[in-house]
Length: 201
Image 1 (cartoon, helix red, strand yellow):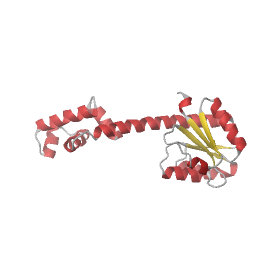
Image 2 (cartoon, rainbow, N blue to C red):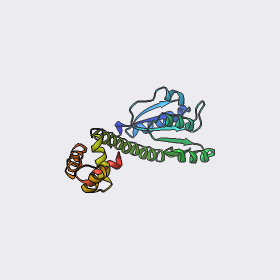
Image 3 (spheres, helix red, strand yellow):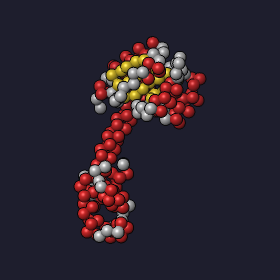
Image 4 (cartoon, rainbow, N blue to C red):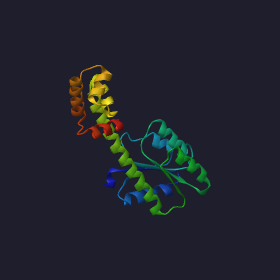
């Protein structure tokens, strides 16, 4: 994994913490961008990004949790790591249940935060790949005619050509033609492959 493709967004009102984390992630080969508050990050959200967000749980203005909630509302996809003080553990646990990727308790070792960053980045990369696959399969699916979509729905349910013909009130020969076109347009090499594609769509 080439870390340079990933940017770590650091949001903390403590300049010392921002500088320390910036140095740490850059020394690990990541790009970084630092912000002193949640509002400045929200005003500069990258449109296409890979990486993760690290935000302090307590900041003037929007807290790290409030930032997460706002990012969720606009369907911003990057995983978030919350930095928390000892008194905020119960808040951090609730944040995990709400979808925050991880929380790291201060003071923390470099290895602890880096492990969390690496896991978040891997998660982000996997999520991006799955999203790309979904978009590609959806585009293929949209090339099917309405009848081909009906036939595909029944194929993936395990119905035979004869059963599909009876259900749609068409001939078996017509089903065979539609089935062939579905496999070709979806670029499915087998019935199992078509079923997997259908599940991803």
